[in-house]
Amino acid sequence: MVHMSIVVPCFNESAVIDAFHRALVGVLGATGESFEICYVDDGSDDLTVDRLRQFAASDARVRYTSFSRNFGKESALLAGMRMARGAVVVLMDADLQHPPELVPRMLELHRHGYDQVVARRDRSGEGMVRRAFSQAYYRLVRHFMDVEIVDGAGDFRLLSRRAVDSVLSLPESNRFSKGLFSWIGFDTVSFTYENVQRAAGQSKWGGRRLLNYGIDGLLSFNSRPLRLAIHTGLWLFLSALGYALWIVANAVLNGVETPGYATLITAVVALSGVQLATLGIIGEYVGRIYHESKRRPHYVVRETDRGAAGAPRAPLESAGPARRER
Ligand code: UDP
Ligand code: MG
Image (cartoon, rainbow, N blue to C red; front, side):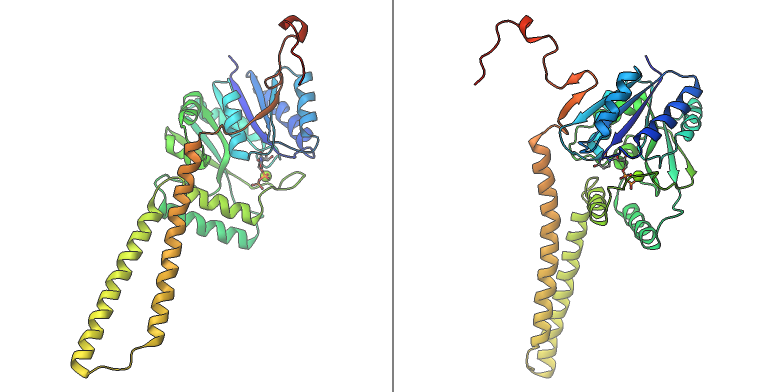
């Protein structure tokens, strides 16, 4: 059994993949442990797959899986973890933002008995706006979520075999891995490294994608937003009751006044706003249930280092009489 598997999701990374591969093999070779590198191509439309094919052809320690289209990083990580056979699995990005030189340090910490070793980046070199947003987000998440999510702790982490098996045993199809890693527990240790800019190529996370990812994170681990909707409804109901009583008392004590048109409009608009927002929240959960209930696979494989997925291994002649083409 190999000691260590490195799982690397790649989506259009042909600009950096060579430099990354060289750096990684150099570092891993120096550790003296046996290793394998499991690349997952997430439906790239550039030369990434060609590079992976070549790596695998020239080095038996390299394996790869290539998806039929872009399924997202979470699916790629899942495929990689399923592929990995090592006693220790390290997840890292292909853009050299997760420095390979840190892997030996992670291994060292694992030897001290930790099941999860997390390398957290600090936020140096990041724009003011993005930093402010992510800080606000993590504060919100800490408030709302049942699992703990740490700022800067991304997917650069080492997992022991039993930690990987626990993650793989979770059946949900909506996979927010930051939450899953925290949910499985086990002894976790983290250390901080200085944020590095991507070596080449482009980040795939625009503002909109990040926002959706954030909403996913908030919703996929609990139903507290629904609870919040109930609380808001209750408070509104109580204040409306108070206001109604006040109007009645006013009418009894001071006689009837002209009714307030502005108050009415405000109340109607505010209430419809709350109702729409609540409907939206419920809709999100219903959508998730719908999504889960379809039980679709997380990804479709186009090819692996052992050939095209689903293709017959043996030549056609030996597999009996050839079928007539339609
Ligand atoms: N990635 C992926 N599928 C996607 C988007 C990204 O496999 O749909 C991979 C990407 O190739 C890289 C890692 O996920 O190895 C992190 O992506 P990126 O560097 O774009 O994100 P950032 O570092 O900007 O958060
Ligand atoms: Mg990156």
